[in-house]
Length: 178
Image (tube, rainbow, N blue to C red):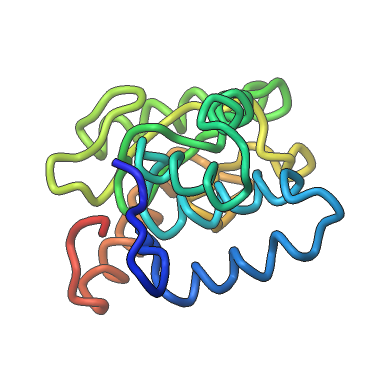
Protein backbone atom coordinates (compact mmCIF):
# COMPACT_ATOMS: atom_id res chain seq x y z
CA UNK A 1 0.00 0.00 0.00
CA UNK A 2 1.47 3.36 -0.94
CA UNK A 3 0.26 6.83 -0.04
CA UNK A 4 -2.50 8.10 -2.32
CA UNK A 5 -2.59 11.52 -3.91
CA UNK A 6 -5.64 13.73 -3.56
CA UNK A 7 -6.20 16.90 -5.50
CA UNK A 8 -4.92 19.10 -2.67
CA UNK A 9 -2.55 17.08 -0.50
CA UNK A 10 -0.84 13.75 0.00
CA UNK A 11 -2.54 11.24 2.27
CA UNK A 12 -0.25 9.91 4.96
CA UNK A 13 -0.02 7.03 7.40
CA UNK A 14 1.40 9.33 10.01
CA UNK A 15 -0.13 11.81 12.40
CA UNK A 16 -0.19 15.42 11.16
CA UNK A 17 2.46 16.27 13.76
CA UNK A 18 4.85 13.56 12.54
CA UNK A 19 4.19 14.36 8.87
CA UNK A 20 5.12 17.98 9.58
CA UNK A 21 8.21 16.83 11.45
CA UNK A 22 9.26 14.77 8.43
CA UNK A 23 8.74 17.74 6.12
CA UNK A 24 10.99 19.87 8.33
CA UNK A 25 13.55 17.10 8.81
CA UNK A 26 14.33 16.63 5.12
CA UNK A 27 15.06 20.36 4.83
CA UNK A 28 17.72 20.19 7.57
CA UNK A 29 20.12 18.03 5.58
CA UNK A 30 22.04 18.91 2.41
CA UNK A 31 20.95 15.50 1.05
CA UNK A 32 17.35 14.43 1.77
CA UNK A 33 18.56 10.82 2.14
CA UNK A 34 20.43 11.82 5.31
CA UNK A 35 17.05 12.10 7.06
CA UNK A 36 16.32 8.41 6.46
CA UNK A 37 17.38 6.84 9.77
CA UNK A 38 15.73 9.50 11.97
CA UNK A 39 12.56 9.22 9.88
CA UNK A 40 12.52 5.44 10.28
CA UNK A 41 12.97 5.72 14.04
CA UNK A 42 10.18 8.30 14.37
CA UNK A 43 7.90 6.24 12.12
CA UNK A 44 8.58 3.11 14.16
CA UNK A 45 7.81 4.98 17.37
CA UNK A 46 4.44 6.07 16.01
CA UNK A 47 3.36 2.98 14.05
CA UNK A 48 5.17 0.32 16.10
CA UNK A 49 7.23 -1.23 13.32
CA UNK A 50 8.30 -0.66 9.73
CA UNK A 51 5.46 -2.04 7.64
CA UNK A 52 5.53 -2.13 3.85
CA UNK A 53 3.32 0.96 3.83
CA UNK A 54 5.68 2.84 6.16
CA UNK A 55 8.67 1.96 3.99
CA UNK A 56 6.81 3.08 0.86
CA UNK A 57 5.83 6.43 2.34
CA UNK A 58 9.29 7.16 3.77
CA UNK A 59 10.86 6.32 0.39
CA UNK A 60 8.45 8.65 -1.36
CA UNK A 61 9.04 11.48 1.11
CA UNK A 62 12.81 11.25 0.67
CA UNK A 63 12.76 10.52 -3.05
CA UNK A 64 14.53 7.15 -2.98
CA UNK A 65 13.42 3.63 -3.77
CA UNK A 66 11.78 1.30 -1.29
CA UNK A 67 14.75 -1.04 -1.79
CA UNK A 68 17.10 1.74 -0.68
CA UNK A 69 15.02 2.19 2.48
CA UNK A 70 15.02 -1.56 3.19
CA UNK A 71 18.78 -1.81 2.60
CA UNK A 72 19.41 0.82 5.27
CA UNK A 73 16.70 -0.41 7.66
CA UNK A 74 17.94 -4.01 7.68
CA UNK A 75 21.39 -2.85 8.78
CA UNK A 76 20.16 -1.42 12.10
CA UNK A 77 19.06 -3.89 14.79
CA UNK A 78 16.88 -1.29 16.51
CA UNK A 79 14.59 -1.11 13.47
CA UNK A 80 11.85 -3.74 13.36
CA UNK A 81 9.75 -5.21 10.57
CA UNK A 82 7.25 -6.96 12.84
CA UNK A 83 5.12 -5.59 15.67
CA UNK A 84 6.40 -5.94 19.23
CA UNK A 85 4.76 -5.39 22.58
CA UNK A 86 3.92 -1.99 23.93
CA UNK A 87 7.01 -2.38 26.12
CA UNK A 88 9.94 -3.94 24.26
CA UNK A 89 12.37 -5.35 26.82
CA UNK A 90 15.91 -5.58 25.45
CA UNK A 91 18.40 -7.45 27.62
CA UNK A 92 22.03 -6.69 26.83
CA UNK A 93 24.18 -9.82 26.80
CA UNK A 94 27.42 -8.30 25.56
CA UNK A 95 30.58 -9.23 27.44
CA UNK A 96 30.30 -6.75 30.34
CA UNK A 97 26.66 -7.58 30.99
CA UNK A 98 27.19 -11.30 30.41
CA UNK A 99 30.00 -11.46 32.97
CA UNK A 100 27.77 -9.79 35.54
CA UNK A 101 24.74 -12.07 35.14
CA UNK A 102 22.81 -10.89 32.07
CA UNK A 103 21.76 -14.40 31.09
CA UNK A 104 20.25 -14.98 34.55
CA UNK A 105 18.28 -11.77 34.11
CA UNK A 106 17.23 -12.75 30.58
CA UNK A 107 16.01 -16.14 31.83
CA UNK A 108 14.10 -14.45 34.67
CA UNK A 109 12.31 -12.18 32.19
CA UNK A 110 11.37 -15.24 30.12
CA UNK A 111 9.99 -16.96 33.23
CA UNK A 112 8.07 -13.92 34.48
CA UNK A 113 6.61 -13.09 31.06
CA UNK A 114 6.01 -16.69 30.01
CA UNK A 115 7.58 -16.08 26.59
CA UNK A 116 10.74 -17.09 24.79
CA UNK A 117 13.28 -15.03 22.90
CA UNK A 118 11.74 -12.55 20.42
CA UNK A 119 8.36 -13.41 21.93
CA UNK A 120 5.43 -11.17 22.78
CA UNK A 121 2.98 -11.71 25.62
CA UNK A 122 -0.54 -12.70 24.53
CA UNK A 123 -1.93 -9.34 25.70
CA UNK A 124 0.61 -7.48 23.53
CA UNK A 125 2.01 -5.65 26.53
CA UNK A 126 5.58 -6.99 26.57
CA UNK A 127 8.05 -8.36 24.08
CA UNK A 128 11.50 -9.66 24.92
CA UNK A 129 14.75 -9.81 23.01
CA UNK A 130 18.43 -10.31 23.60
CA UNK A 131 20.58 -7.50 22.20
CA UNK A 132 24.30 -7.20 21.65
CA UNK A 133 24.99 -3.87 23.38
CA UNK A 134 23.06 -0.90 24.73
CA UNK A 135 26.15 1.09 25.70
CA UNK A 136 25.82 0.72 29.46
CA UNK A 137 28.90 -1.41 30.15
CA UNK A 138 29.91 0.58 33.24
CA UNK A 139 26.55 -0.19 34.85
CA UNK A 140 26.23 -3.81 33.75
CA UNK A 141 24.07 -5.75 33.62
CA UNK A 142 21.58 -3.48 31.92
CA UNK A 143 18.34 -3.58 29.97
CA UNK A 144 16.39 -1.10 27.92
CA UNK A 145 12.60 -0.97 27.90
CA UNK A 146 11.64 1.18 24.93
CA UNK A 147 13.82 4.21 25.68
CA UNK A 148 14.16 3.63 29.45
CA UNK A 149 17.42 2.21 30.80
CA UNK A 150 17.62 -0.01 33.87
CA UNK A 151 21.10 -0.85 35.07
CA UNK A 152 23.05 -2.69 37.76
CA UNK A 153 20.32 -5.32 37.72
CA UNK A 154 19.82 -8.55 39.58
CA UNK A 155 17.27 -11.26 38.72
CA UNK A 156 15.20 -10.43 41.80
CA UNK A 157 14.54 -6.92 40.41
CA UNK A 158 12.82 -8.20 37.25
CA UNK A 159 9.37 -8.59 38.80
CA UNK A 160 9.41 -5.01 40.11
CA UNK A 161 10.43 -3.64 36.71
CA UNK A 162 7.58 -5.48 35.01
CA UNK A 163 5.14 -4.37 37.71
CA UNK A 164 6.07 -0.72 37.16
CA UNK A 165 5.23 -0.96 33.46
CA UNK A 166 2.01 -2.85 34.16
CA UNK A 167 0.91 -0.13 36.59
CA UNK A 168 1.88 2.55 34.07
CA UNK A 169 -0.39 0.85 31.53
CA UNK A 170 -3.25 0.66 34.01
CA UNK A 171 -2.93 4.36 34.79
CA UNK A 172 -2.98 5.13 31.04
CA UNK A 173 -6.03 2.90 30.62
CA UNK A 174 -4.55 0.87 27.73
CA UNK A 175 -3.43 -2.71 27.37
CA UNK A 176 -1.92 -3.04 23.91
CA UNK A 177 0.44 -1.29 21.52
CA UNK A 178 -1.32 1.05 19.13
